[in-house]
Length: 305
Image 1 (cartoon, rainbow, N blue to C red):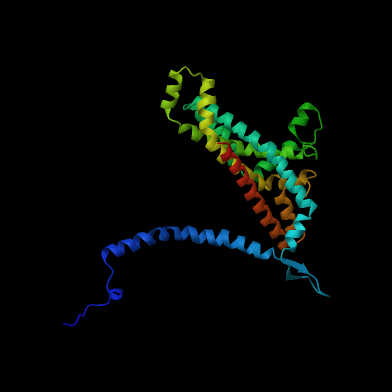
Image 2: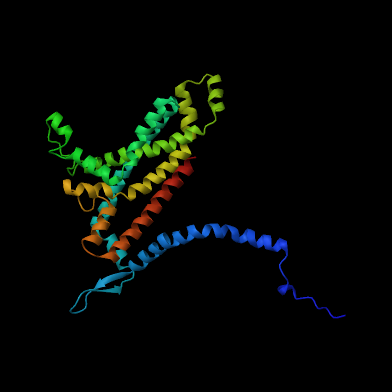
């Protein structure tokens, strides 16, 4: 008797097969909007920056300069650019001093708030400490620019001094003060949230064993804060490498060098000189340097644990 059944490939999929296919493609369906935006606004610009960094401006005879393929010429130039290298040294010095001080202040505030717990005082101080972060960095720069002004500073008017907070010797510290004032509250909230996840039974057991408040802080709270501190430190390192608004806003108020930070120098290379290809190469190198620095820091912290 002849078998008239359809081949296996042409048969309708079984309900189990349909469910397996649905389970396979459902996550991609929900991820599609994010992946589309991510590809359009992150992957594509990064790819274009890499492509653009391989070209140079070339003059041949008369007429305007034209774009020509230059390979790694822009990258070689960046490593020979003393202004760019100096900006990296500035930001490294800034990072070594400012990030630990900011995290130390954020940790202290988080521990204080954890002691206060709830109530009006707790809510008030949480809001007060976090409030500077809600101000845009440009507004914060303008506000502190007024306070730093040699002729308008309330500090100089009260003391009768003529301290120039934007002098070359203390300029990085003045910018560091703005960044610390802005971001300490943000890191404080992160650390405070980590403290709220500590089980209360752990505190009770420590107190039964005779632990004082200082013992609780030193042997219970601070060790449990280490993962949150590591995360905050990595974000702070990445954020430090991106500093731009604060020094740029202060430029009209005093002498702020073009290479005070890598991002400021990069912006001026593009905006003032119109060299987009070289600016793209500097941006790529800055991203790679940030990635290496944050990875080295993370590996060092993990190696100690």
